[in-house]
Image (cartoon, rainbow, N blue to C red):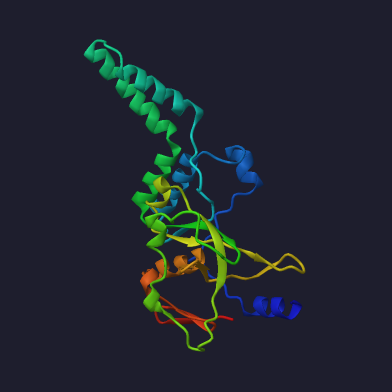
Length: 250
């Protein structure tokens, strides 16, 4: 492990100004408030990165559950009650307009989805749970996740041993509101070394029952090269091909 770590450090390259890490650190939390932040704040950051010319953005935050402001549910109740009321048409119209404005302000998931759609360059990560599947999945994956499965015709087995990638038994995708607006989605699994807790490997592809899904970093690399999931080829037990780039794997 020490030899491997040293070799990695010696072989690392300076990415220059082409790659930036936007870190959520203690200073950020002190300035912007405790975590989790409302998703309209995430949306503002995406808007800033897009306006600054970022070609591809990777979000390592999971959006597997809706973020509902407590005030939003009350506004929805007011709207339903207003629908049942008989009142002056003009007064009702003004009240509806106020409710619409409040709904837009409090619907942080919708705000984030709007920024994802406008930017058109955000790659989301999602959770997969490692394990050996025995039966069938609990439920079907959303269409927007299935659209990023690697096509079967792009998978080959040069050794003939059918060496499958890391197997998973469960998936936790982003909510549809947000996931459907992302440029792409990839798995975000960090395999921790059992000896010292370091991360030295990444599964570029995982298997989920009968499908293969790329990692978020592989999809980020693809997006930065103007490629998509159809440009990824898997040579089981040997390598991953991304366009004309061949990445050797174990």
